[in-house]
Length: 309
Image 1 (tube, rainbow, N blue to C red):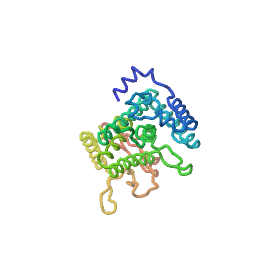
Image 2 (image 1 turned 135 degrees about the vertical axis):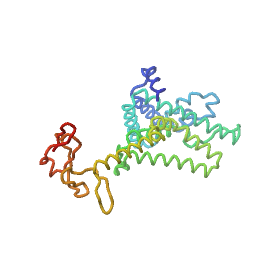
Image 3 (image 1 turned 180 degrees about the horizontal axis):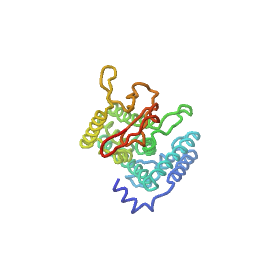
Image 4 (image 1 turned 45 degrees about the vertical axis):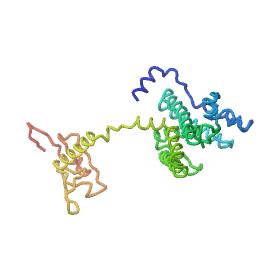
């Protein structure tokens, strides 16, 4: 993250604001192209590594024209969702960081396609003409990584699944992650350790931008041995302080440290759930009273180190 901060200071002015609007335009253009000229995208524009290595380098850019669907209704719905999520991430991170996240997703998508192609060539042979990469190298995983980032950043956002069922974003994120793990395991199980492993590796690489983002924004200091020891010491001190303060009562045959205890009558929250407790601002010291004695007690005053009521 420190590196990203330095890059933002130096290159932030070159960021593309409202990037998702431009991507939505490209997706829409890809959809219209697929409707007017079926098969043109697969023939000339997709991320076909074999053809890229044979001179068709424009595919490294034009593969982003891949439409999300061939159904006009679903295209409009998905483009709306992509735009909303992209704009939300850009508003939270800023244009530069969102640009880095999205463009790194495109870069890792290209890398995953080349890695899968290279491993497949070693297995099948150099004379092959085409490999069906089944989604690897497509915009599917780029958009999935954007969804995952949104689910992590705004876990309590609500989506209407099937337009009826409200679902928290964090649960959708868990489902997305579980599906990716399932895809990797299924391919390894059904396609062999080499081919299936290559596909699983390509899946991991294709969402590497999310993996890097997730691990770079976690605070791992909180689970370090020193931090865990500090928390344990703090809990022990708090426990000892409550014990010494007299907030110890016998409840159901054992001693219990209570959160509240009236300095007058000694009642606690264990005696009555409806009792309310407050500290008195006029008493000199840490004195807590129940609602019955908060306004009727005599204030505590300290005189020459001695306490008088």
